[in-house]
Amino acid sequence: MGFLAQAGADIALVDAMTVFGQAWRNIVAVPVRTEVNASVQIYNVNIEPLSRLSLAFVDTLNAIVKRQAACDSREAKKNAP
Image 1 (cartoon, rainbow, N blue to C red):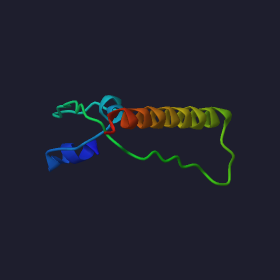
Image 2 (image 1 turned 135 degrees about the horizontal axis):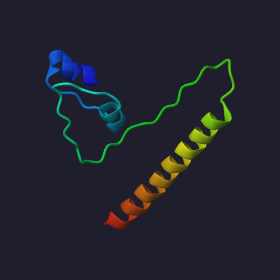
Image 3 (image 1 turned 120 degrees about the vertical axis):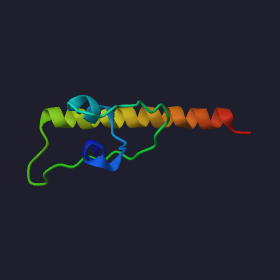
C-alpha cells in the first residue's frame, strides 16, 4: 500500500507496521485517529500443522477479539435509549 503513495497515487492508507517497517523516502506519515472496524483473517498452509508459536498467536488474537466484542457490547448497552 505504501508503494501506491510512493508511485505517485498521492495517498495511501496503511497500518502502523507498514509505516514503521520501511524507510519511505519522500513520504510523510500522518496518523489517523479514528475507530476502524475490520475483519481479521488468518491464513496458513493447509498441509502443515500450525507451530506452537502460531497457535499461541491465534489464541491471543481470538482472546483480544472476544474482549473487544464484550467491550463493544457493554458500550452499546450503556448508550442504548
